[in-house]
Image (cartoon, rainbow, N blue to C red; front, top):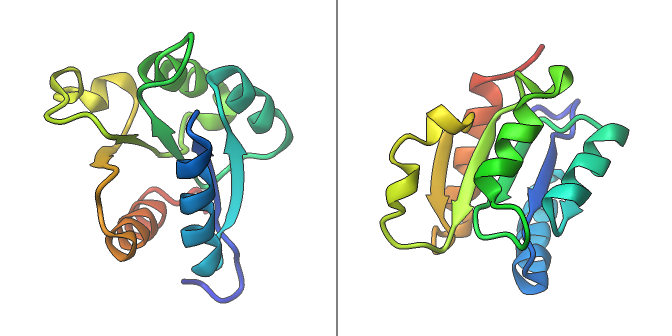
Length: 130
């Protein structure tokens, strides 16, 4: 990771255990972590800070992660911010066209933490705004 810059990841998930686990993994690897438990909360968080990447659960209460992704990507300041769908769903048929929803990738929640971190770094560097 670039030693001069701490990457910011927004993790959106309604499960407090998943939020705590991913926050710990990312902080261990020197990421700044922003957390939201719903789409509405995610929209409020990005008013204050623009993340380098958004890790977004699909199964959210009230509004699905797919709809949240569309809303986030509709904001001009977030059009270039990569979104990764992060799901526990097996063979998510509705994600075959995840790029059509504005995401750059989707990962299963069972992914090993080191692989998750490597993929996040790869995507941030690939889609870097700088």
